[in-house]
Image (cartoon, rainbow, N blue to C red; front, side):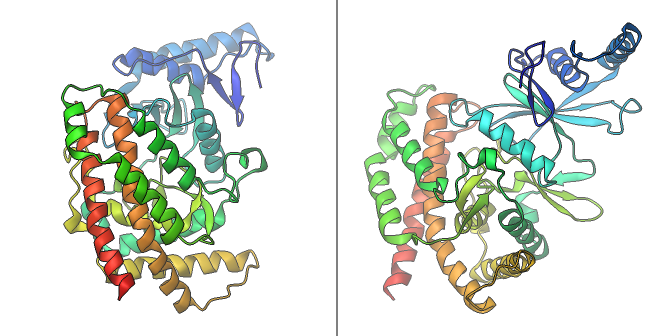
Length: 397
């Protein structure tokens, strides 16, 4: 809805569409956060004294707040603003400045995030501005590293949280048009990115046209997409609201309680649960940090034993969640584990093409100077061929 100041309200939090933050300007980041956290609404009955108190508080905070860059993301620019105590119960907030322009519907994504936050699945939603939003800061949590993913206990804790997301979150009616479980987003997204990639006429960074011509086979990728859709992925694969981007940096762990918290749901939506699991297992290899610069280490991928352990923990948590809703399972636990483990192998293939095409389009839009999206695409497509060879061999035998 709109206020007298033309401020849209999303889930009872303000949205200033005309404010755009400059990520290189600390004062811009702070002033925007203060405008969202302490809105001055002409419609309310605040008297002049209360308004003056609010403005004085904002001026004091403007002087004392500190901003630091949060590392780990390549799509968005992230900042932590600290110093709200004793004015608030919290001391810090997260400022997210959106990237991936044109690839994510930020209206739908922000509304979805706000709903997830309201349900206690995502961090708090505190408001939105033209090119980003404000989120609650997770005190005493740290993002996982690739080394952390090698821990079996941590892996199984992630599996439990993923199952809770899939079977514990019900998409509200106002968002079902965009998160329709009758139309999982995988194929729509894949073929949309395929079409976008095929239409690329030039790349932002010098030399990438030559690299693309030498190393990318987009017509071949299109053939593989059709093969996966028509012959590999089951038509009746289970669908739920999925994270779709559960890499190490999008998973937080509390330093004391060891509680797992999923963050960054911007690629979230109705999808196949086996794809969400496959995506996470592929992310054991990394490749998306600035330091890795598009080079995954596939030696870090989980063994078949570790995959089985992850899926066992997932199925047990999912069955527990299904039991709470009165849903009955047709398969035994052992049969469900075996079936899902097999299904995930096909989605591991689809996941390589998913992020490979994403990276091709990112290379065109964002360039490859700060992160080598082109290199990442080339590596994901190459690994697809390696895994396909193993997959076909197993299927034949």
